[in-house]
Length: 357
Image (cartoon, rainbow, N blue to C red):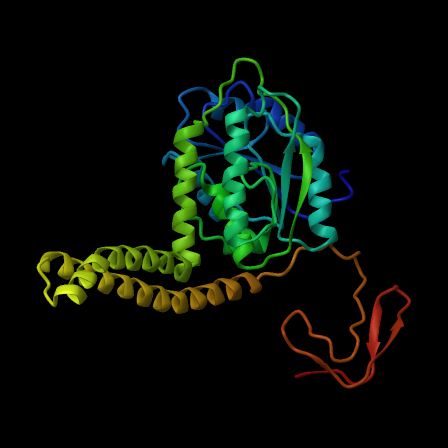
């Protein structure tokens, strides 16, 4: 396994909060699964010895004082340079042996994200409340943004460099997984999902996830992302609700006017007109923000495209022969004809006129 990825810089990112019991084994297992990778453990203001035991296990330890998984990941994504990023929770619930398979899938198909979908029969490892909430929230995101993932809240993922360095990271807590998913869907990145074994926590460690509190935070994040990425849908829904309310208030006033020629309930008529005005303001806001969102999406796409796609490194001393008219990595194109021959050292050399246009 060491030879397979030796020419790639792989970083294993492990955000941690009070994982003194589990983190040594996580570091050890991933060091064994990916021998050439650098293991980074970022401590999120833990009150136990998480940072100390992680360093003793051989990890590179960083610190993030602002609480929340989203804050830790934002710091890790900005600090760490690598070709491939493996993100995993520090609670020892994910299978380290699956890491090479996930990395290999990303490289083989030049993907930007591989999501590890949790599979387990252990009820304690994946409680009913967490499972139901995940299915509900994942279904909501699938309905709005597209059906690409079945386990949106998985903490085990592999990213390309272009994904990590183009990710805005606006959330602060466990809702970061939702933001990761929507980012990939909105930029139409190449992704896949691979089932991975999910296991129970080590004895003595406790989960920091609160089903109701964090579920509501994730639901709120979905609403924020709909407003940011689908403003026409968000404000269009507001338009429909306000317009229906206005019509509901106006209907008896209009009927009474048609029957008597009088408008005795002037306050209701004024309120109805004001609500309808707000409805149309909401619609115009949606139209304007939809244009802004398209511009923002194009800028994010350009930032994403500035970074090369992930791929297996080529063998030393070998350069591919580019057919006529294909784009070069720098953005130029080969003009004219070209033939190829191999010199005594085995390097492929192009022959014939070559020019960049």
